[in-house]
Amino acid sequence: MQYAILLHQEADDQYYASVPMIPTISQKGTNRHEVLHAIQQAIINSLHNIEVIYMDIPDISSSAKPEFSTAKSLLPFAGTWAGDDLADCLELAYAVRGEAMF
Image (cartoon, rainbow, N blue to C red; front, side, top):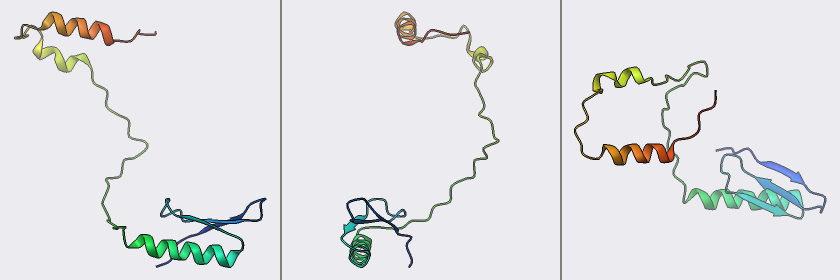
């Protein structure tokens, strides 16, 4: 299997390598050969502890707009409170609500 390796040399003349597909892996070395060998060994060692799972994720179109809830959906329940904690619930609602800005 092939992995993309990001390799760069810093101002301190050290070479740094990282693997974007496995973000926890990075290595440094004094030359290209050393750092590439080190990153190869790090990949091999990490593969013993990594399980690759392919999962289908539904496509969520960026053009899809979220559906916002309105109070209209609550109207069927108006006047049907059956608990004895209405005052506590209202007190909590007043305590945590934010200030509306129009």
